[in-house]
Length: 259
Ligand SMILES: NC(=O)c1ccc[n+]([C@@H]2O[C@H](COP(=O)([O-])OP(=O)(O)OC[C@H]3O[C@@H](n4cnc5c(N)ncnc54)[C@H](O)[C@@H]3O)[C@@H](O)[C@H]2O)c1
Image (cartoon, rainbow, N blue to C red; front, side):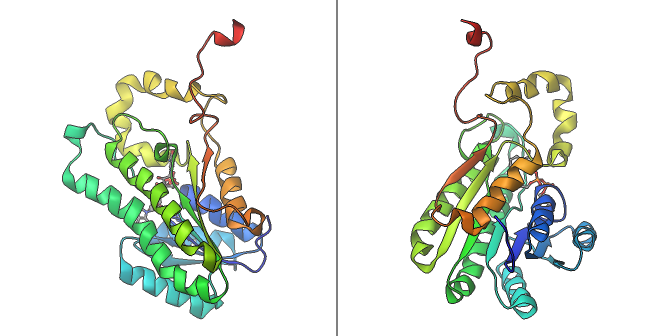
């Protein structure tokens, strides 16, 4: 799964899952452009990764920002082999507590952003004979959860878009896949912690209703992303790869193991 001489753009890489992906890619031989809107954190993360990492300020919802990012990456490295559409935002709220603006923002960042990224890198990858695009979906791309209507819409949409893109771009050597983790950076939930404080124990109990209980470590998510980014997955395209401890396999029923 080495990434020697590959050039990668990883969005949402200032912190969390994206930073862990960027770190692994650098360690595996790639040149990595970290893209985010958290400029200070992004610069610091890139600096900590050494000479093979560069930070660029990119709002994934902006076509112009994508065009500039692609142009700058080509100036610096001459090619783009891998795009990881990792940037994402969460909104937790019942239907009545989800505004039109909340819903639009999630679709813009989580679904339109990856679309614009795919659109921006496609001509470049096509010219160099192909590439690998990996989207970071979620377990919420595959099974729904109450209180997450906007997030589920955006992540199911991302997965469907990736499949259509995979069919459209396969003959150009461009693969498009989606990793669907049941975990990531706990900081993503910080804005909602006060609201769930009264029932956090019951809320998190669903994490144990899986084949492998508990949260999924970032390392496991990064392993799956690296596999799909690398040439080792040369005939995988249009897939959803859950990294979820069996959350989408079905329900673990306590007690039934002893029947
Ligand atoms: N945290 C979880 O438990 C979890 C679970 C499943 C899937 N995911 C997904 O994993 C991905 C990474 O999330 P994370 O867990 O590392 O959380 P995170 O909040 O640490 O990372 C998200 C990053 O995206 C960046 N971002 C947000 N809007 C952006 C924009 N418009 N342009 C560019 N960058 C933008 C943020 O600044 C942040 O650095 C997301 O797509 C998320 O939906 C997270």
